[in-house]
Length: 481
Image (cartoon, rainbow, N blue to C red; front, top):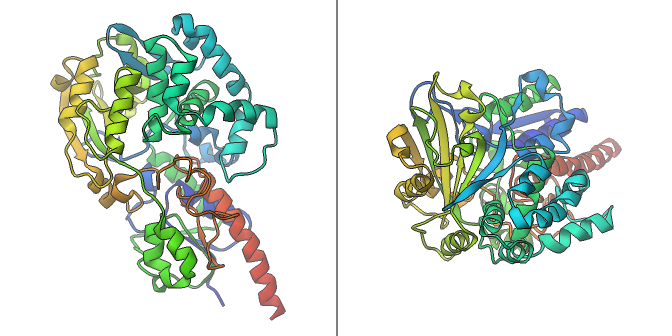
């Protein structure tokens, strides 16, 4: 007889979510993690100097607080506290005041000048119906429950971000602000559906905010793990799974891994056709990341930027578009789009008194080993002259080092695969249920399934529910035998 009902490999947000769903249903669950600590992209470590707590990857969690699954869990009971910056995101542009994305649609729209009415028309229906939109799109492809709302969102979301910015807005600041949001897609802004990333992130900024976990993203991982243990789930760390032989016997196996790793572990369990489909899965560009220990806050030319948790650095729509297009074509931009987060703007506990932390990354070709520190800091200095003077220490990781840190980041791809039109809902393969495989007892619960990257746990949630249906059938079959 199987020792466990289900074994989950990988303790990122999706692996933890899958384990919790199964444990809530009364299943005996074991969660395995190759590293000595849990969390995947939610780890917090002293990367630079003692007392400076840096998030290794994810840091700002709008989908964490908005997740249809996470918000049902009593995570505050285990010490998780969300902290919200005064300004969700800022976008500086040369010779203009920075655009500040605030919780209020009206307050944000005021900064858009003659585009203010267009901004309100674009965002108000989305914010009003944000929960219905999340319920529709944070999961596998399905018929719309609210067709008129989905039609309004979808008609714009399918567009290339650059096209939507040019159609919706006239001012360079308005277009730049939308480009900064849409560039989270890690694709050229001329690609279809890149507008969806900008719309979704702006909608979340107004509807729920862009919070951070007090003390670091590790606190979210710890809270999820504590809740799992309270349900009877087991967690084992420091065990790297290289083949199915490394796993204890179980009725079902769920992998919070990407297709490439799954093939290495369970290749002989799959049909040749399914194997070929997994081999064709496409990974996206990588990231180069710098973590900073700072003697004081960043000296922004526009002081209002200090109120923001997240800052998009890249200038105009045209500049950001060029940067992302160069990266997609295998080149390293000399003026990259830079995503910067300043956690101590809202959570001073992460650094010694009076000091600060920040991190910044830019997009690079998959597998890049290029050091982009100079290019990133040139972009920061462009809007914060004197920044280098406040840097006490820095820790860098190029794309291949990101992959070494987390095996799911293939070539530095932090999204578990490119999220373009082809792979948005049909990841990792074209299948009615994308969480199942050709091996009936093996399931995929990683961001390589819908809805893709982000700390929301929904990939794990849907995969676990698929596994529960199988486990019910498997147990009935066992009883019959």
